[in-house]
Image 1: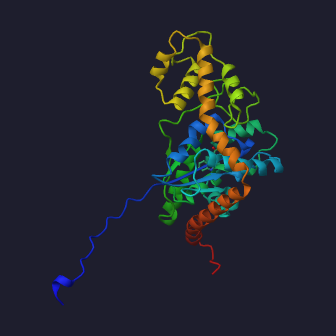
Image 2 (image 1 turned 45 degrees about the horizontal axis):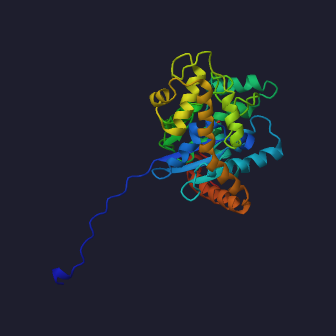
Image 3 (image 1 turned 60 degrees about the horizontal axis):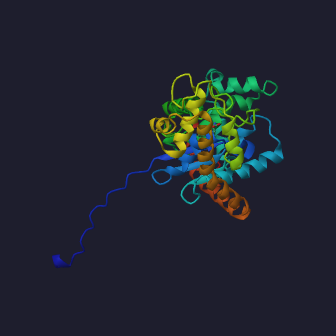
Length: 348
Ligand code: TRP
């Protein structure tokens, strides 16, 4: 054969760098997200989709650790799912699913429960807080909540977990469980890391800025919900608790104003310094109005998208079924590996 007729060997193609795997979850309670959930977490989920392989989950199995009304839970789960998409999670780019649709979560959680110590779970501050709040229903699920969360994360060989500060302790525990299991049986789980983006704001209650903004706050002025109508949002900001001074500056001891500055900054992209300059000489009233309007504008397209999605139940069904199928496919591989390592007799 003549050398010149030989097909050229294609240059060895460089393997594209593997994208990090991201997993996060949010509870369906109330069917809406707070401004804190949005600015601190869900808004960033969408932004990660191009550079990472992401899985996002509505955690209805976690939700039943406190008593739920069944009709409400069902309705809120669908609504939280739609809202997650409205906030920018794209079901074609990411795995967007509902926890109870994917059986591997409960299955791995049981196994992980047997590799999690009573002492470790007893130290979880969320357990202590929630058991104080629901003293009449301190159930075993509330106690083992972190092992289910560890299962959520570890099933997908997750590298990064975007979470708020309040979930860091649970994530640490998930890492400890992964390391312990890997130590006993050899490499099985990727050890995940918390991903707390710098831009993710920690949003405090508008009624008591020393407390985190919470879905379950009894004071209706404390919490802004993503689905609140614009007038309500503006009204809540006007009533926000601040201090007796009159200067819009970010300073220790000015929790209320600091919170409003963080929110305004998260929404407008302005720095605290720019905000201080813009509002120099103006009163708190003007500032609160501006923050309220900016937030209402930011959330308007989210609410509109949500309303449009909620009109198309068939589309939502298609999305969450597709998400669950993909999630099962991926997570089953991890679960199979785990069952094999711990010595469960294979079914076939
Ligand atoms: N515990 C989280 C919360 O209340 C929700 C959650 C469940 C989660 N599983 C998760 C978050 C896995 C990140 C990863 O906010």
